[in-house]
Length: 173
Image 1 (cartoon, rainbow, N blue to C red):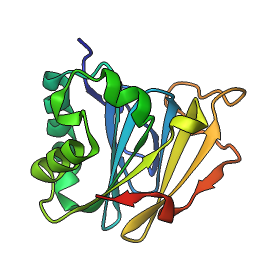
Image 2: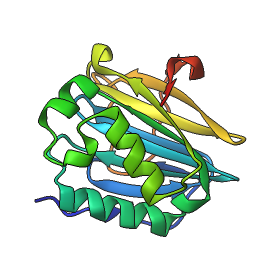
Image 3: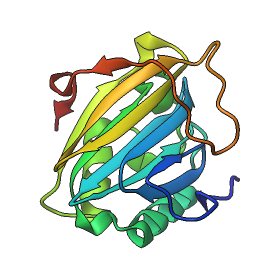
Image 4: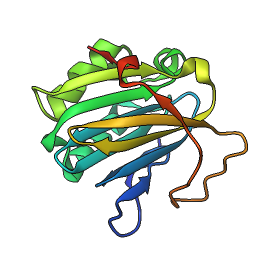
């Protein structure tokens, strides 16, 4: 069983949220190495919270993720974006509340903001990528970079050229 942890270090406008971590920032989040994982990004007024869940996430670990998301300010978020390799993740995740997009949506709004919008983007076809989210008012702009050749050291926010993910590519559920 993994230990779910907050992103280490002092508060920063830009953060890296690795597997089994949760964090918050005021500008940008990078989720490295998303190939079979799912990322959850919440956006509120001047705040972004994020979690990086693996396909091995258990029900107890999912509970811990939501406790940390709440501690980071998730209740202030009106928009949530779930991006990741759903084809891999849903087939293997043991946590029953994250086996389908409908269940994911229901758990997110139950644990954060009941009136929140939850949008989904499947990255399965993109392979192993880094996902980037940059706060843009009450929403976020998303992009990705292929992981191969773009190394991310520890929790240092990288500066890569990225490919935009159009907001219209996210499906509201």
